Image 1 (cartoon, rainbow, N blue to C red):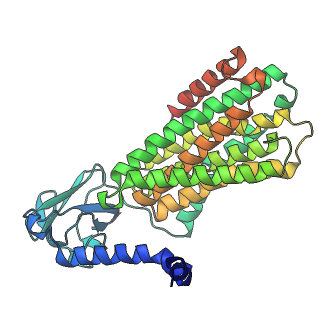
Image 2 (cartoon, rainbow, N blue to C red; image 1 turned 120 degrees about the vertical axis):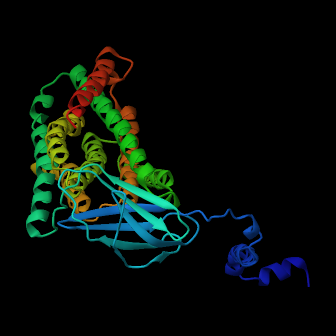
Image 3 (tube, rainbow, N blue to C red; image 1 turned 180 degrees about the vertical axis):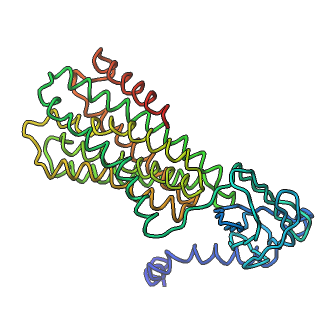
Amino acid sequence: MSTAETRSRVPVWLGAIAPVLLVAALLLVFVSLDPLGGLRPVPPVETVAFERVKLEPGSIEMQIRNDGPDPVTFAQVLVNDAYWTFTIGNETLDRLESTLVRIPYPWDEGLPLNIALVTSSGVTIEHEIEAAAETPQLDGKTLWIYASLGVYIGVIPIAVGLLWFSALKRASKRWLGFFLAFTVGLLTFLLVDTVDEGLELASETGAALNGPSLFAIGALVAVVGLFVLEHTLERRRDKGVAGLMLAYFIAAGIGLHNLGEGLAVGAALAAGEFALGTFLVVGFALHNTTEGLAIVAPLGTEDARPGLWHFVGLGALAGVPTIAGALLGGSVFSPAWATLAFGVAAGAIAQVVWTITRALPAQGRLTTAYGGAGFLVGLVVMYATGLLT
């Protein structure tokens, strides 16, 4: 029997999974033999990530996760350098396992708290709270407040910004180019801001979850997804990306960014940082008004006026994610999930900036006077309003 005939009798699926099975077997053998076991450091590497801290009158509750390669067993807890009683769901945590720690401690409003977990090997892992404040209870009233803040931060300012459409329709081609370049500047600033905030959250994510990789994965998924969507839509049109389609792309990118803004406000309020939360609400509200202008800028090049339902859809696409972000930030905020969300937002905004730049008319190209001025004004305006946040 020839070699070709033998190969033809091997099922395709078996040839496809055989390498995977061989690699799995190799890894199983490696883990079972543990040839590196004799090189492990002593004491073991013990690291814990504090994912969420909840303060109630006379009580501290912490969600912690084993962030190291070795199991961790907790023996004692110190609060402000004093040993304290505590209860824990699981005294020993394997890699990536999490549990709740409850400490009956009479903390004082506005004063700092230093919490230290002492492991069975004597390693001390600390968490600092700069100013103690009661965590808001997640009842119907609190959720309604979070949702209302999302409306105030995202939906209303963007809806106000959309009202600039009528003025844009009467603008000359040069000024339309200016405002499209202004949009590029605005989104470029949002991109830098989103990357900065995402990487900051990534640093707060446990090392085992690899925050920077989560951010990169989210960004790449958004870029690839939007490129596929754009390519699919362009195949159905003869003239490429139309103004209305571009407006929806911008609204989607801004909406993902506003999801992160909602997370920031919700998390600040949930942590009891009410002054910071109020400051963020006012700043984001003023900041987001210019985003409405960015959304309608491409519509100035459209011959026909879009229907009212398009404006409703654009406003909802850009603003409603702020509500979801505020609810998530106030209830189930996690640095890892927030890092992933900011990564998706950064990827979406980057792809939208690329799409707009390719679609800029001759009068709005960044190398022209109007285009260059619009880009710089967009950066300056976003920087100035960003100072309020």
